[in-house]
Each structure stands twice: as structure tokens, then as C-alpha cells.
Length: 256
Ligand code: ATP
Image 1 (cartoon, rainbow, N blue to C red):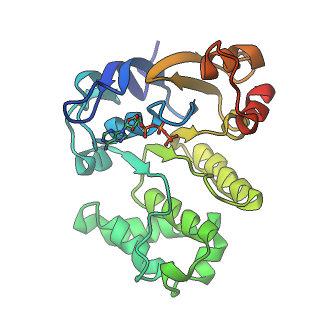
Image 2 (tube, protein in one colour):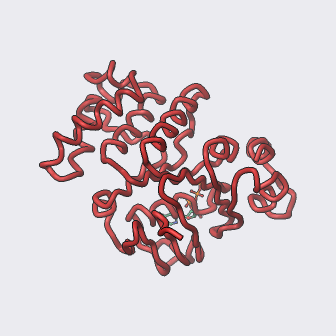
């Protein structure tokens, strides 16, 4: 069997002296895969993403990327190795133009690579989001929320990731923009970029991913294809057996 792109073994993560919020998580992400990660508020999704991107040092366990142990790597080192995170919310530099935002992101790579990276990836980015090409001289702070999310994603792409970690890329966006974002994710996957996508809306990510992980109370409660995680199983993994089921997410669970 080939080595997975990302191999996570018995990962336990917490903040300060507090009890861990992520317990003993193990999973693999294969080359070219778009893996979904779902769970309720506070389940530990963002915490897992932070630990994978170098933003938070795990208490125990192992993270291997392309066969190399990553534990304790800084965010910058992770970016150089090819792991780039798109955090929740629109992360743009509001007083700078669209083009300057892209240039600054490219500078996280080595200086010599900057011009080449921008030239190489600019076509891809502007092809995915033509609106950004039209607005390249506009200040990022004047873009709409959807355009800012496209720019955030473009800033991640320009760092040439092999693995993109996306934390709720559809949060707060109009359905038409969500479609645009997910269509761009499919294009990126076709271009060879692997992804771990966190969503609270399991319906949205289920329609885009090959496999999903359900996180519940800091533990992996279920893993499988969206169709194998049938409604009742996903419901139990998501909410437990107490019967509480928020209607907004129940709609998503029902379609899996
Ligand atoms: P949401 O869907 O609401 O974003 P989540 O599944 O991403 O939730 P996390 O943000 O990972 O969940 O939070 C998991 C737990 O860790 C929560 O109980 C939260 O209060 C706690 N937590 C998150 N960030 C910190 C921090 N910086 N310091 C201490 N505790 C934190």
C-alpha cells in the first residue's frame, strides 16, 4: 500500500494547562484526496487544523507529511513543505490591493521564488476567479465578503500547497459564492492539490468529498464515504444518542 500524503497517529492536542480538546485522533489523507471534516461547534475541528498547520504543538501523537515527521514544525516550515491553511474568516490585508495581497503571500516562499511563483500561479488564480483579475488594483477592504473569501483562497493557492487545509470556506457566504468556491476546489483537486475541508454543513462537504471524518467531543466518531455514513449513523456520530438534532445540520446529515 502506498504511503498516504498525510498520516495522523494518536494525536492529542490542547491549550495551555487545560484538558486536551482533541483526543487520540488517527486518520490518513491520500494524495489527491478531498477529505471532509465535520462536527458540531466546539468539536475540535479548528484545533486539529491548527495542529496540522504548525500553529499548535501536539501534546502527543505523530503527524507525518509525505513520509516526514512534522511534529513541532512552525507554520512557516509547514508552508515550505507544502501544507497551507486557509483559516476561518476572510484573511485579507484590507489596506492593500488585490495584487499586493497576492504578492505578500508569495513572499512566504523564498525571495528568489517570488517572481516565478507569482507569474506561474497568477494565471491559475485569475482563471479561477476572473473577478479578482478585474479588481487587481482595488483595495481588498473594498471587496465584497465573497470576493474577500476568493482572495483569501487565492492567497493560499499562490503559496503552491500540496495540501490545503480549509476551515469553513463557505461560512457566511451566499449560495452562489459557495458554489463558486467549491467549483474552484474541484479545479484545484484536478490540478493535484489535496485538501482537508472543515465544514459544519455536512451536506455541502459531503457532495464534494470522497470520504468524511466526523469529530465529536474531540474524538473521531466515524470515518467513511458520504454514502456509507448513512443518515442514522451520521446522526448518531454527530449528535450522540440524546436525540438532539439542530434542524440546519439535520438537513445535511439526511443527504449523506
Ligand atoms: P466551531 O465549529 O465552533 O469553530 P470547532 O469544532 O472548530 O468549533 P475548536 O475551535 O477547535 O472547535 O474548539 C474546541 C475547544 O477548544 C472548545 O471548547 C474551545 O473553547 C477550545 N479552544 C479553542 N481555542 C482555544 C484557545 N485558544 N484557548 C483555549 N481553549 C480554546
